Length: 207
Image (cartoon, rainbow, N blue to C red; front, side, top):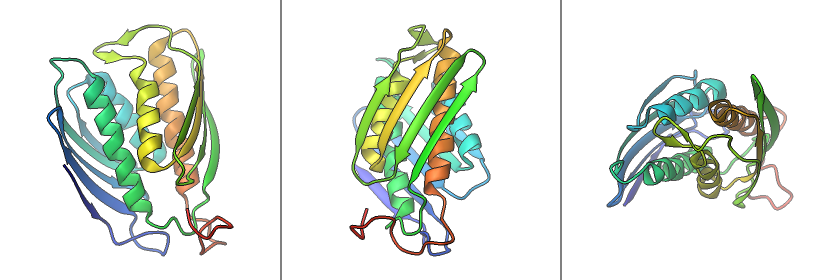
């Protein structure tokens, strides 16, 4: 079950915000997102490292974000991470509305010590995901490293993003953190409103 209530804004000068809730047999999730925020976050998923990554995502994307998730962590972290990404993606879709005036494309690379991650994004409405690289250790605390890739995939599928990501390094903590920060910075860039544009940035007239 998914419940949506969006903010009044889009790229017409109002607030671009959304609140999305989702309940399944595996997770119960509430997310609120303000795209044009201050980088404030309040996150509680039951996975410490994942909370840290979502806080970093909000901080470096200048998104105001709250996330609560009650998930089946007695099984593993998969459903929690995947479902949070699904709901967050739906929140981006809701908050952006018709996407009028947005920059649409962005390309960011972020280093963290020896690691570097790159993200190229098109807020296209056409979900597609490509990933190059691997994580150097299997786990970071209670977080399975490869779930960072799956988070990016699930976010792309549910926010309607064409997203290409890559990562390299020798420390999985650094690799995953760089990836989340690159996601944040690229989405911040791509969702900004271009003051020269009032229409949808597509020759089709719709994204």
